Image (cartoon, rainbow, N blue to C red; front, side, top):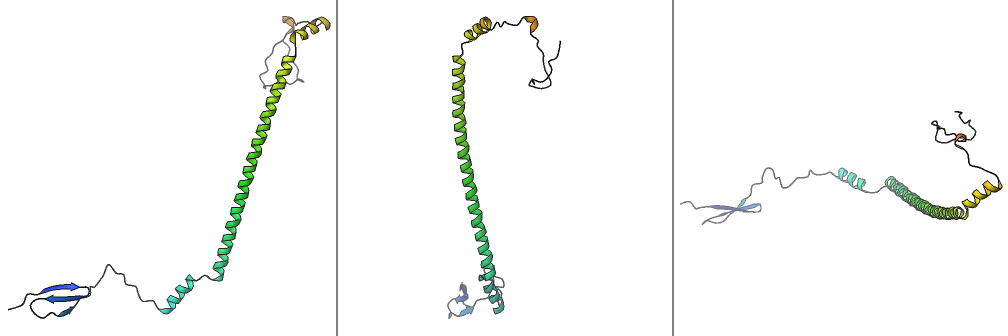
Length: 160
């Protein structure tokens, strides 16, 4: 009677279980293993070239140093420019404050001049002492100038 066999594999070794003596059977190697990627063997010259490429040599260090110095100079220039802009903005703010102060003083002086002039007194002196009179309706000429927005004093007044 033939013994019933169970085949179980553990790792790379397969065992046959049954009522007979247990024997180790060699496991079959699969043709393609998708889980493992085989690397081709690398000869010594290729390996030395790879190691040499990973090392930092003099031209690489010089290029890296130049890049770092250039970046540092660029950062210093940027900080100087930023400081200059901040100083200019502060100067503009100071000038605007001075301008506002001068405008306020000018308006106050103009108001004091306007309130200090007595127009009734000016009229009295002009008419009584200097003999001035108001112009009649026929003496006043109105004209429109459409060429520009302002009147030049040296231009001829048009005649009606």
